[in-house]
Image (cartoon, rainbow, N blue to C red; front, side):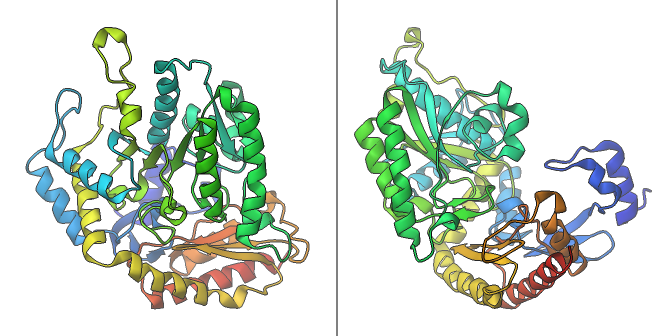
Length: 453
């Protein structure tokens, strides 16, 4: 029987696997950690070490690992139907999930198209928007407007409407050309300027782009309130209100990519609620299944759906498809996740948890190497800099955030930074005691990462 310990599994892994978002050479010196089991906020490796999952395993886990209620829902579904194609066939979990989401999402989102993952959901929205204008006689509309510092996925279409160079730059020759507009990122606000004032001021750039390009633009795509992969930069809901109005005036679709920020992460079930707007397309994934199974969907309006509804010979149908579209096991996990939201006062409880997160790191506010502590709901970010007053960043080559990551692993926490930004985005079941422990570990790591050249 094969030996099951960290060292043996790491050696086996490195002979056969190629890991995502990783320079594999790092693992010559950075131990790879095989995980044996998970429970609540904890991950446990094969040597018995435990780690608080402070980043929800890439922002997907909402109610803890091995959640009994989601476990039971998936097990029950497994005994009935594991999968069936969703072309010409259907199943009750997909129908029920679509029905429930239409009740929970902003008004006017009346049709649900399933896909497999976040990038796919955004691809669906991009293609639907383009195809809608083509079906309605506006074939000149072929472009998209996006914000600087945005991230929407890593397939070619989603890379094209993103703006994080680390992911995009290599593949630039393969990509369609989007129209970039400066982000309302409030880290860039002037001293004394409020988030609302800065976000409203920055909207002038979007208005100008729409005035100039609306005739050729299908849609504007944004991550509402938080640009997560873009170093957790944040902005005020007023920007979304202005954007919804402008898209209406200029006859352009609005795509809200809530893959990372949906399902309670920003303090409301969906971030768009804080601006009281309805997008034309809403993309959801990650927390949709509570972190259990890959599933995504794109919600849109009945009027957009009707532009595709015609005789087959007209060739107006939307023929995008994925083999595992609407997988019943994923739908069962998603329905159990929504049941927890309905029964457990999750949003209200998260307000207390978010406050505890803020209090736990308040002592870092004046740290000489912390430029800003920012928070939107259950997302909190600490930005390390070389020099506080000028906000001079550390050179990225120094990998200061990696020092925090290494320290946190030694102290029992998974804190995977974004460059020099340390962030908490934990499962909602985290306790205040666990939050204080995370803050202590993060503080130690920041001191260690910033104390030497």
